[in-house]
Every structure is written in C-alpha cells, then in structure tokens.
Amino acid sequence: MTLNPKMTFCKKCPVARFCITISLQSGVFAVIISGKNMKISHISKHPNAIPIIANWIVDEWGDTAPGVNFKNITTSLKREIIENKIPKTFIAFEKDRYLGTASIFENDMSTRPELTPWLAAVYVDSKYRNKGVGSELVKFVMNEAKSLDLKKLYLWTANKMNFYQNLDWKFFERTNFLNKDVTIMIYEF
Image (cartoon, rainbow, N blue to C red):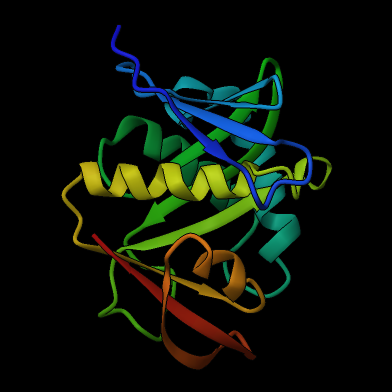
C-alpha cells in the first residue's frame, strides 16, 4: 500500500490545528483531523448509506428542486453503484457514522445544459459542520474529477461563494435558478 501523507496547518477548522490527508491505493481517502479519522469513498462501498444520503438531499433541496424526492434519489444512487460513469457520489464517514456527501453530476442546472460536469449535492450533517468535512469532501471530488481527466467542474451556490473561493474556485456568473439568485463557479484543472 502506497501512502502519500500531506500535513497542512488548518486555518479554517475551529477544531483542528493540523489536518493530515492520506490517499490510499484502494480509492479511499483518509483524513485525520485532531486525532479523528475520517474517510471518504464512493457509495458503492457503502450502499447502506443510500437512504441517509437521500434523506439529506431531500431535506436540503427537496422543497426547491423539481424531482427531488426520496424515491428518485435512492433509485439514482442505486443505479450509480451498478454503472461506472458519472454521476459519482461520495460519502465521508468515521467508523460507523456518516458525516457528509458530495457528487459529480453531468448537469446540475437545467437552464445551463452546456455547462458540464458539476460538483453537486455537497452536504455535511449539521453535527459535523465547520470541522473541515465539507472542505475535504470538495477537495476529494476535485481530485476524483482530475483523475477522470475532466478539464473543469462547475457548481452553483446561493450563499457559499467564500467557502468555494477558499478552495480556489473562481466566479463564473450570477444567474437566477429555482427562483433565487445564485452564483455559478468554475474550477479548471
């Protein structure tokens, strides 16, 4: 097993002074934050997380996005396990606790079908927010996208522009989507 540990001083995380990230050959990404051991992997390795992810997505976006309901999300996630292509969904976990999720979608904005692919459905359980989980999920998906030879990723956000700018995402444009003003951002590899 080849380990490539990288220790970084964590300025944003109120809990950790240092974060250590380790890429494992098995495709699992380990993050040690203040002595805690968080891992990130594809949902195919954690199919029992599908209902949890579906509930998170429905709770966060179900009232604003058409077609976002428990049945549609679980069906999509189950299909993703079988097919080895985008979309790809990842889960952050620590032992038997699921902390958050993030995905790569072909498209996450029906009004801009020419923009593809997207970082999407970034969600961290409220108990684990502001502890570096979201940043690590986003960085993991960015690395995964690069390993798939994607040249860029888009995302849209209503209120987290600074969070993504701190991860080197760039402003692309402002637009109205789902009856709210949002910012589209881009990351180019």
